[in-house]
Length: 384
Image 1: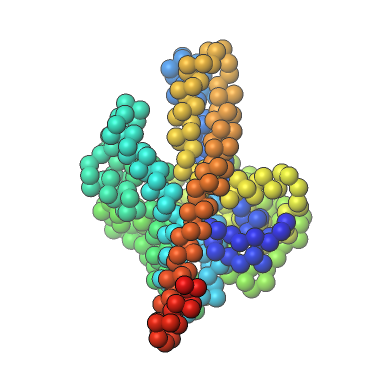
Image 2: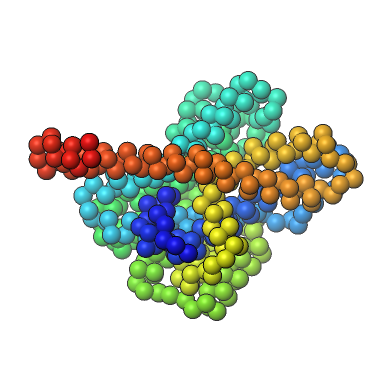
């Protein structure tokens, strides 16, 4: 596999083989979430047609746990040398915001427009103006009108981004420390928050959300990055066994209680990500290249697939023979969502991210020039 610049992380081309391994992990995580939602929607179609819902009784949201472990690993692995460097925290936050905000805000705006113009297409109303603003700003809020009480933004899957934003801010807040001390400090803070949640029975919405035990899975990825930095590696057979054990654990322990999720689901997710992060580079070939591309598009796939599935449902109900099996419907939902995510990534997410990253880099270089000398130094540093 040829070296490439990773848009999502800002990592240098020399990190490409490792990042390709992790992108395959991301593809797996995103696909499992899509499978879960496709099977759920197949159940909706089954209810409308009086048929039996397909699929095994598995909580496919364990893909989120894999994402959180990968997030911890990537952030520490890519930014490990930036800890204690002046201005590193702000640069880190800029890179992450440029990465996640454009697509999320775009799809949230589409959801808002649909809710205002064609409310009959949404199962849950848009909500109050303050709720909409909170959705854009990654502030957890209760979703009014949901069948069961839940803390979700307007674009429901954005609940994971509310956690990611917590991870970004928390990690940036300790970047003035050496990396090992920073992760130890973060561990103490997260452990204290989770302990306080249960000891004090916290009910305040944002504090209750941000102190959920699931935040500990981010720390698992952080420590995995430290292990790689320390030189830990796995031979191919060990990596294969570790990955298989991780996937088995995820399937067996899905649906665990929130209090035990970091242990019963987070640790198997760690095993899977460790197999990718510490094992050898995956062999080349079309399957690996496609899985890597799907991993590149995993953010687009994760956020956009509910819309694709919703469209697929309307098409299926109008055109499909009622005798057709609903497992076929679920399969087509997964395929359609995956194929739709790739052009979203290639035509929108990647070019917009590169454009904004370039502007951010220019501003940083200009600031360095202004600090170093007269205005012409800034002009020279930006190429203008």
